[in-house]
Length: 180
Image 1 (cartoon, rainbow, N blue to C red):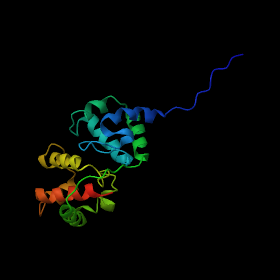
Image 2 (image 1 turned 60 degrees about the vertical axis):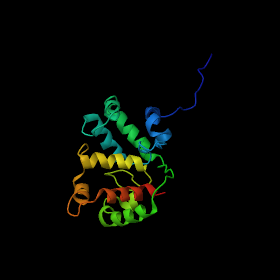
Image 3 (image 1 turned 180 degrees about the horizontal axis):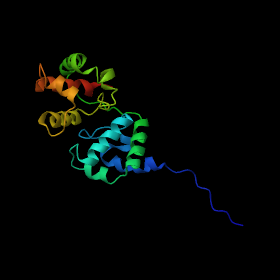
Image 4 (image 1 turned 180 degrees about the vertical axis):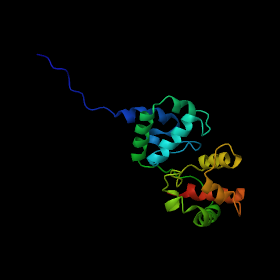
């Protein structure tokens, strides 16, 4: 009697689904391109909420909205859980030391309550520490121009009393980008 061959366990369904993200977000979610965020190591809740916003059209996008609509809610949950378990890869990037110093001061005064551990921890915003500088600049432009809704707490700190100047916002971006 012949037996069917026993195959080694292959990649999980979540890993297979997540391979489609590699073209923009890098292998295993660690982006090698400065305009795309690293998504590995992001909080699961953040990834899930972000994908829901792309899928509904609440968060503007050129590609992500169309891609998110192709996945079921269960598939999105699997991918969010998968990426959340991976290590966040930080690439060394050029930053201005004076801007980093000013950005740290602004972070400590206005941002550290929500962006814990110098931007390494936050379920609401994901990981900012070590994220690509260009991606953070694009995100802030979208927030400040109204293209993307800015969270209320963030708007109060950036656009409220003592509104941050573009130079101060750039300094905060340099600070987060400098984190290793």
